[in-house]
Image: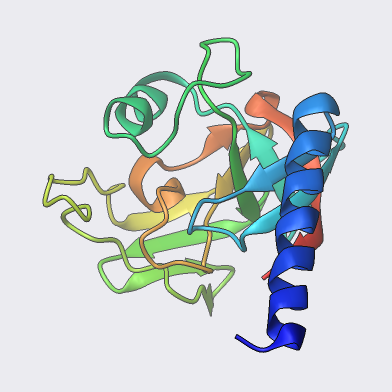
Length: 176
């Protein structure tokens, strides 16, 4: 390795270590290593009324949360059920029309990239797909769909979630 490359690797390792230390000591910093969103350091502020396009952290409720935990999609974390909060973009809010098909999801007629559901996860386990149809998003609900990774566990599998499960609004600080 060249001296310049060595310096870069050392600086990158120091930045990651400092970011990790800060994230573990500051409740507003989050390190994302999930493939469904860009890897890196995110700032999480108090939750405001979610808007389409916002990135949010949320505690996945009920059966979808149990599935995510038992399959290893999430680990232990700070949610009331002791599961890790998810980091997802808000794809649809109250009043939006969501169309679910085998080919993917549309919001107000616009297709979402990488939103076609898979019948099996990466381990070959069957996935329950949200039923095809057209849905008007109710007040107090949102759809979260991460088009960053086509295999994201999101609303294409569990449908809309209550806005009350949103724990914060996230902004990327340092991602790749």
